[in-house]
Length: 439
Image (tube, one colour):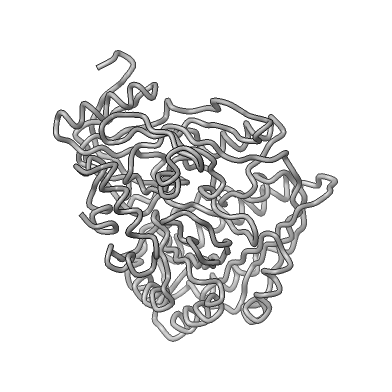
């Protein structure tokens, strides 16, 4: 064991607090060689291995009772190639650090999710995405991957090198190896104009096709117990830059979206019967605004109110029907839901286990405030999503198993065959992977 590799053990908890694990030991490698040595040592000791990022998954995808690898020393940009327009970054780098470093270099990812606390490897391995008519998930922007496989060797893959691994490993849920570096495609930094505007549920659903077609990035939030939505349209802009004024930004993004929203949720948790009234107020709290800024300042926002989430991808053409079924289910039930439902889209991509694999997709995400019972709501929502051949986000709450996935993912067998080849002894297995991929 090298001197820089620290070891400890204890209880690990995810961000939402709904998953815990007690690994035999935790290892924080300072290099790819140290990580490879930790995997070989685990094999000698007959232990499984999982890497864990910031714990932003709501599933037990990273939980282990074996060796927990923490990649926080494997951070930073390895290389920028301005000819190929790529950046190679260490796996433990938080998205926030990557976005800020790229902006300083005059570069940007094409699209991103709305949270940037996660590590690049955690976000891509679970299929994290934003919204886009033409631009897809973060994993779809990957040009190359480096990972340590079960035998402790380092494997690189891209469209040209080990392409069959590349086809699956971009969204690998930690089943194929421990990702150590990712090469992303980047472009010169650009400006986006965001237009946020309240709109009724009926207007959004009736006009969804137009809103989707006319905007590069369209998303909206529906507030359960109301007929109100907040919409957001992001489109590329020639400028000039016109960021949200600091005071208004603080009032809307921190005070209302985090501070007041936290208090409203605490009140709703204590007095569930007040939730519909709170929802009506919340849904009217934010007024319309337009601003222009660099991508990460438009796509992402702080999320300090903790919650538990389920998100499913349905075929895009099934979105409106699915959403209307969800609304009528909530309307006729005794459920009290204090968190808005988030709706986004993605084009089809070519990654085996991507939620948008081979089909244009729309995402519906349901949330419950941390500490409130979510099972009844999620069970009913999941029944609706699965009736439309929904595919759950790999890092969000769901109850599906390998049998279900083999039906909704045409390339499921391709992924499991590759797993058999790369990890025959299931060094990277855990209970979650046994459920979703089979043993």
